[in-house]
Length: 303
Image (tube, rainbow, N blue to C red; front, side, top):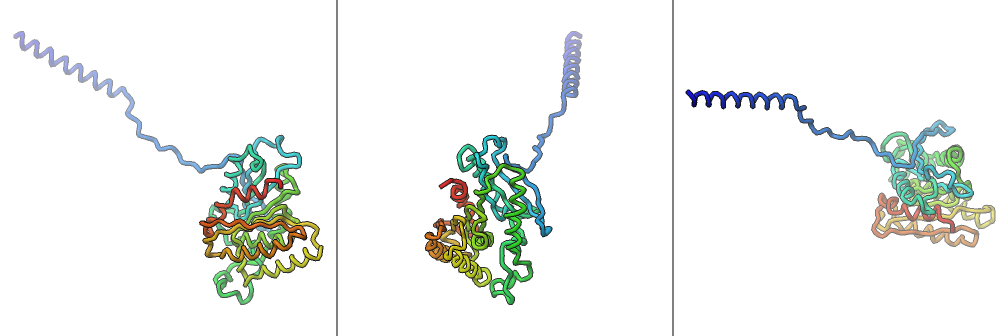
């Protein structure tokens, strides 16, 4: 009988142990499933984005990079400003380069990207804003673009040098005498137009891979008129100009850019300062990213 009692006791103890284990397991919270962090968009520090309507009613998205919290440390004459066309595509690169150099002279500045509402890098409205009216009939290589508006470059220049500039000055302490402009491709073509049309509107202008072939090289007429005015003394002062281009640029062959700088360099006696910067390994679309630091130095360093 003793062995039966011992076996029964051992069995009872096993049952109690299992019950206790079950109670402990029941009391413990269930293991949590791994929770994936909520993804959010990245906002670059020291930047702001807002929209502004031109007098024509056209709405632009404005991106601004500035020395945040340092308004009391601004230069005596205010911060210099660089306006970057195609802001949706290029503002990020210029803003990042300015931000990481915030404590250097080139970082004590303001970068303004001028773009369009929406998240696309490019907007077809750039064709309208950056060009002269498309010829009628259009040159063969531009026929596909005849379905879009073109020819509002003067109105866009009015917006850049008028309402937008006034709004930037209202929000930030800026130097009115050190306003610069960067444009690439058709934006580079517009940058040349800004120089020819209003030579004193900007302190410095950078034309990157300018699409001078637009409208059968119609920009050459603007260049000739500008050259004549400058040579005659009709222009009191003019912007500094830097042309940047990639040697592997098959959209805008680098040779026209070199020839342009050669022609304009002959006007140094009339006060025009021009330089050419070539990037041996860059193609059309990669030129702006490669040129960012050179552009900031050209625009912001006092020479």
